[in-house]
Length: 269
Ligand code: AMP
Image (tube, rainbow, N blue to C red; front, side):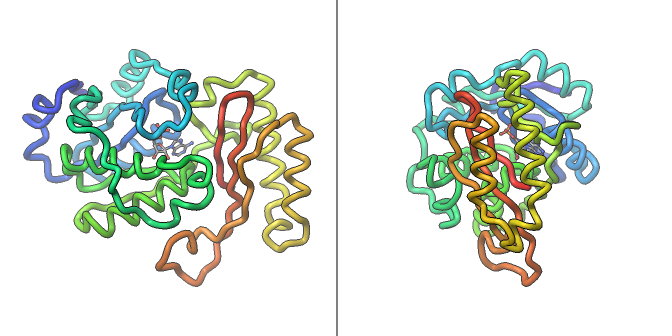
């Protein structure tokens, strides 16, 4: 594994790579990231991972400040995973002239997390586009854990970078059902147990919710009773319908964003 901190050094190595899989991350590498990496390694000649905590996409200072930063550990894990290239850029190399506020993204960005995190998805698409311009990957690997992000990025890339394919990867979960997330590292044992109970509650009631046999409010109240103080949203959506064009096969998911302490967690089940 070759590690690069500077774009120019990276470019010397990857300029002639024609079959490059790109896995963008913000570090604190976990099994969800490793699934993306495995898929890229299976499908592409070379795999490039980035670790970059994109300050622009954070809405709250505390979220950015507390975001787990474990670079040495990450490097060890990625070495073991035998990726080809790791790029860990500094902000001035990614944003030499600041963020691009004029970026046009799918209106789906106004729903779910978009209602609670203004500008978040624009900042995500902006940073991915910046990486695309540097790396010129053939494929980009993104997780279904962040389904809204996946759909928005997919839509943007289909429109603007037709030669690049977005590959969606299934959500990796811990044995207790909780989706792997870097932010899980910030949870106490008690909070982790609550998160697991929320997952099971939604999973066990999913069919009833989808068939409207029980109201979503019932589940919401049960989640509050588990000790959650704030739920940004819990909604049933047809995944195929998130952005057009959609297929006729309905595939519903329950989307949720809630807080445990200051930690905001999202999932779709
Ligand atoms: P992050 O480091 O949180 O920005 O995530 C980097 C990529 O990993 C994104 O495409 C995420 O959707 C994906 N990812 C994060 N957690 C999981 C998970 N539990 N399962 C699958 N993919 C994930």
